[in-house]
Image (cartoon, rainbow, N blue to C red; front, top):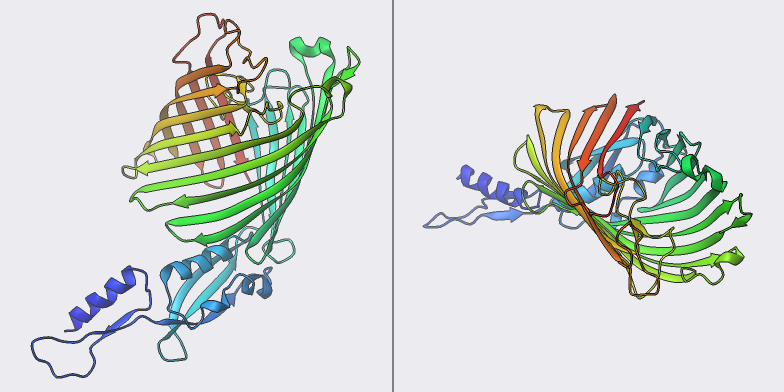
Length: 451
């Protein structure tokens, strides 16, 4: 009899009722028996805060008191723990104990400190030819600064052509709403064959990003996102005494999340709808068709299927599409090449208003758990909408408003946890244009050291 009761209890616990208990009430046994199920209700949250920095109010602001007295479900428990874990500088775990009242179960939430600060020193050749291919920089975070799970993220970067970039993002929470004001600044001066132009410029971004989790559990999550950014761009050609300065305001709404309903498969995604307005600050741009309002839609999908713990399948898709017949400014267009595009092409290659980029690969870590080998094939198609002078600039393809590029290659990645990483991307174009005249093979290199 007890074995049957245990099986029934396990069935309900496995299907999302962690405190469910089956029992046999007093009865007269005949040819059948009655088994009662007590699903269990949420009693109290017992918070054990062992953090030296996190304030109690920061924890209580994330807990739903309205769930108390209701049937306890696994996903509701996971949701509470994961939302607390979104705070920086701490780690949270949960366990169950019998409550003080009949049919109730209390949730014990244990909080401990994690790293107060982290940093990474990195080097790569991901830059562009004019502003500097080789780059070095530092990025990191200072966690739990004010005791509310907040953080200050920072980065600084310098190229071999003295292009400088730096920025700061401060993250804090209003309940479960994450608010992230940010500032990014960069400047450049074109070198090599562009040096005679005397070209230099700068960009300034002032923005705020918002993220609100609708739900988070071990299999799925869904966030609503939004934000605003003010951008000031200066492009000056000193040799000619002219400039192409402009500024823009943009708002966006979107979603992001994960889906893990398929066994051995993890899918993450995000979508973003952007409305913006670009205003000229130079007489040379006053009649430009790229000035004014614009709309665009962006989406990304990243899927990993694990055949076993040694081999997995990778599928990554990025998409951008203008909405309407808007012609986008270069600050809003997509680029097909680079370390984050088709890797047989240089950074900045193939500017287009709309594009789709797909990478397919098989990832192996058969030699070492820290060493990953990924042969891949990737392709991108970019296009401009039907407007005047909509050519995509590429030798031998004058008059064409679209372009297709692809590559086959090998990605090598070694990661020593809490130590360093080294990443090599070797790629060669599979399809070549006869009149292109450019090399379409490339080696991208990146390394970083963690502190």
